[in-house]
Image (cartoon, rainbow, N blue to C red; front, side, top):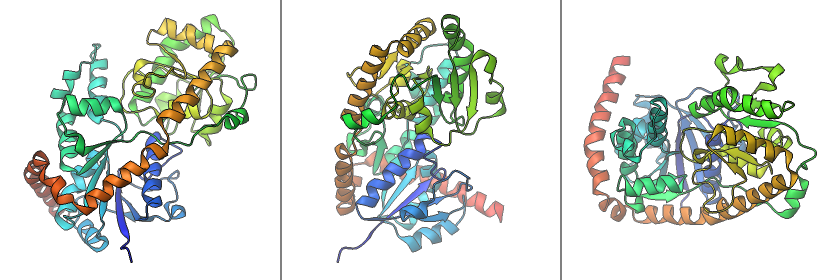
Length: 413
């Protein structure tokens, strides 16, 4: 009889697939491991939320854990997982040394979500009103922590090919430590497309995004201050509906119905909101990873207007699902054209379907990931032997992290 394989996921937060792309990404990962026979436990030190998914419905055990507490040591020793997946590098920093100490044979996987150091460096360059340069990453404090975390793990899941290139070319990470895994969605058939609302049945522009994510808040500010006035000047009846989880008071203050700018708050069903809209607006000025809102637009058959940053690593050489434009004047003009020109709109919609079907199919990646994880389970010693820098960082960094954590734990008693 085959031994049941156990996966422990340590989450930064509890999954909220209806609130953020990160939540959807986590549920996609859970699905892959579940289909491959893993018994899954999801642990987090985060507080429960009203919008977290009910993990028990997916046959997943839920465990609340504490930061800087030996209780985690007892928990993981008893669980004795074969694989531990860290949700973002901060979680690996906090719990990685405990996993290594108590379950040294467990395979350690890091899901980066996106490269935080890339997002941080781009945001700093934006605030300094200068162009981001790749060498900015080399002096970024977050990069030192994030790259160290990647090196300490047996495998890191990277969502963007652009980020794969950065890790290999800039930080010289061995590709054996990395696995490219984009968002994974269902294929769209011609019949699926026919079931979506038509051009005539749709109305309004829409933006959707979790407001706890700084690039989303910046995008809405930019829409309100720079883009929307230009659109309204040439298209007076235009309406923009802005949806997003966790809107702050500064977001709500942008609500201006008389100007066609509506702050709608959390969407009960994001898919339905995007399906009813005619065009998604996403003039994103900094960030990293892949943009879940733009993939969702393609799934809903809704063309989008975005920037080079917004579309980065999402479509290869395939035509975009709408318009890519960085200049605000041209962005506004092309957004209006896409909204009003049915032929352009339909062509853009079909482009999105092609992107979905060629770039984001689960069957293209899930078997490869499973094969890699099984190979690591079979022979992790050889893999780790060739990761000298990871072993070096584990030896030194974990000592400092371990003693800091133990000091906090003692202080809290």
